[in-house]
Image (cartoon, rainbow, N blue to C red; front, side):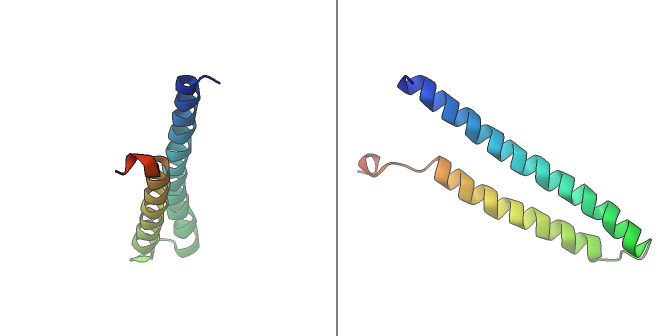
Amino acid sequence: LHYPLRRQRQMCIRDRVIRFLFWASSALAVGSLIALALIFGSDLEYIYEVAAILIVWLTLIVSGVLLSLFFRRSPANLT
C-alpha cells in the first residue's frame, strides 16, 4: 500500500482497538453491577465500588500501554 493509505489504515485499526477497550470496560462495569446485585442483593456496600475501581484502573493501565505503543517515536526522530 501507498504510505499515507497504510498509515491511515493503521490509525483506523488503533482507533478501533482503543474504542473496543473502553466499550468493553464499560460493559464489564455494568455487568459486574448486575452480577454483584444478583449475588449480594441490596447488601452490596463497598463491593461494587472496589470492582468498578479495579476495572477502571486496569482499563487505564492497558490503554496507557497501548497509546504509548501507538504513538512511540522511531529512534531516528528522537534526535
